[in-house]
Length: 302
Ligand SMILES: Cc1cc2nc3c(=O)[nH]c(=O)nc-3n(C[C@H](O)[C@H](O)[C@H](O)COP(=O)(O)OP(=O)(O)OC[C@H]3O[C@@H](n4cnc5c(N)ncnc54)[C@H](O)[C@@H]3O)c2cc1C
Image 1 (cartoon, rainbow, N blue to C red):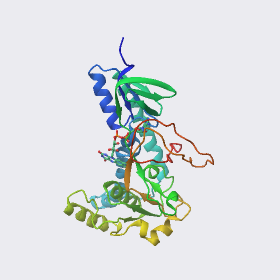
Image 2: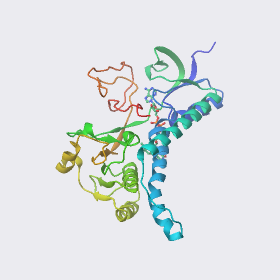
Image 3: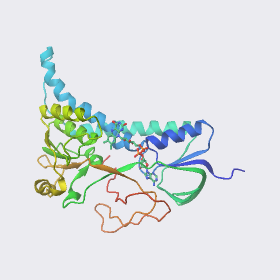
């Protein structure tokens, strides 16, 4: 009789959790994985994959323009973001299915539940307790917005993948690769795209010359940069934050790609879900993770 229900219990079915679980199962371990939101995690659902689809979409306008020089008579008759969102959602559903089949084929038991740590060998998911020789916390990160007035009216990269219309103007906050990608994507799609960053150099953890060169190339394509400016001290940006609508054609959404914080597998202080007047309390469990967050994002748009 095995001492534990599973040899490995993984919390989080993102890139890390899925890979580790499949490998462990391949070596003969009895594995369970808990996922509270979507199989494939950030990369598949609100990260690399939709980002690449959006990036391809944003290049098409330029391609159409260039096509004429190569003898093609392509004409640009408009861009429908809602159509792209719908097609992207379909593709992601397909990928979710592939992740499910990969896990099942490896013999990994999937629990579509939020899991919380009880102790070093016990996890609670869906009202049941499971024991495991090893528990892997692979809960990923979540975008964080700075606390400035109007921040609740802004969006993060998560929501950017579910906008139902292309905004006329966008201000992207941040200087990392995700911020730059979104500034390029919105610009390529036809929005007036602006980026604000508190430091002097974008992509500061990359090669210095590379960041400068990339900024020059992006400027040539129409993205404007405001560097050395902290959104928390910028009156103009803060005022723009107070614009009520994020999706109307002439709105000015502000997208935050500032940083991501670790997710908690234990208590979250009282969070107010959007559109709700009540507060929800997550169960208190036993693990220290850096930063509390309120889960504002749901996939209801899919
Ligand atoms: C916009 C964007 C673009 C990106 N582009 C690229 C790229 O081009 N190339 C690249 O290499 N990387 C890219 N990344 C980064 C990449 O997505 C992440 O590095 C990767 O997803 C991290 O994987 P992970 O398994 O650590 O976490 P995640 O993929 O975030 O997975 C964690 C999972 O845990 C689940 N979870 C959390 N808490 C619990 C709980 N208590 N119980 C159950 N489940 C829980 C979450 O729902 C989630 O599915 C991008 C990220 C973003 C946001």
